[in-house]
Length: 369
Image (tube, rainbow, N blue to C red; front, side, top):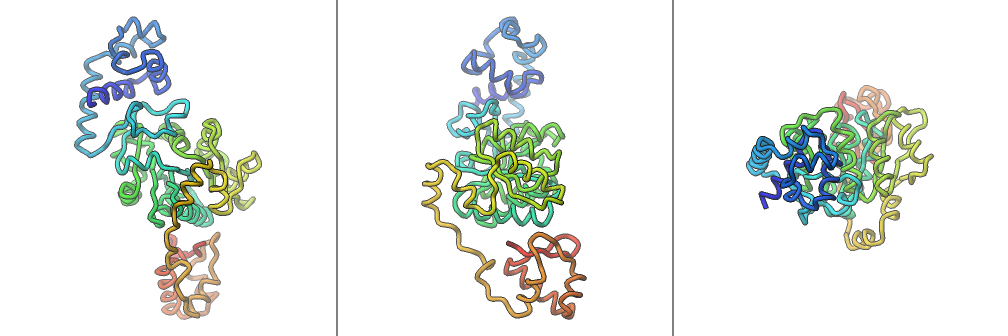
């Protein structure tokens, strides 16, 4: 088993060959062992550049693959190859599935019914709230939430799934041991315990800008559909939607305020035919019959205090001053409520405990959906 894994690692790591080049060779030779027994001349006749062919067959490349495998074993990273039965079936259907996947966490999450939720790194309170609610509602009904662990919408989607005690998958644009952004390290640990973190990039690979568009095909490829929450005109999230369409997957979008720059992407998608999403049902009703039947067997998690806690008069009053799509600073709340600062802070604290509101950086607050 290790020998075959090494062979796939060699194929995946040779610069100049690329994922598609490796697939072309595997289509011809059928398995990596036969491919690596070919001569450099034979590989060159199949269109492989001379330098790439020699590197592919070199002892140095084999040694590097052995080091990579050793690091993975030491760090409890599982390597899935194209021939591994645990390799995600849906991902294998795309045009250029990764030759290898590095995985930390529950590998079986990769073959569960999943929906991707993606969007802007510079998300508004409205976008964060919408992504969290959507992920929470879908995850509580048995769908796995897939995203990219980036700031903004991705982070909100993962958090929503975790809040519902559901499964979530984070696809990295770096090595699996290199969590980016750094502030999401704790979130990554939580994801690992309730799903998994994956990457096609070797260990120690830094989060270079060119890696993120490459990983986007995995986010869409793992999922039955992709939902865009917020994205500016040139957002990388728009790439994920285009890839989802190319892969024959469903495309969804949460509409936004037409005056907001971050609404450009989802509103454009809707104009071009993506399904407008207002709640989780808009997504589930478009899923294949087999997925819907499986989800029908799932019972939603019990609602949290979000809807069941009894509110005091002060808490109700403060809650009515807040909106889900616009943050209100505490100074403004003091002005609007005319409450003493101690009474206001007490009400805000209780509302946070009851998960009716969320505090943002800078002492601003938004109502949760």
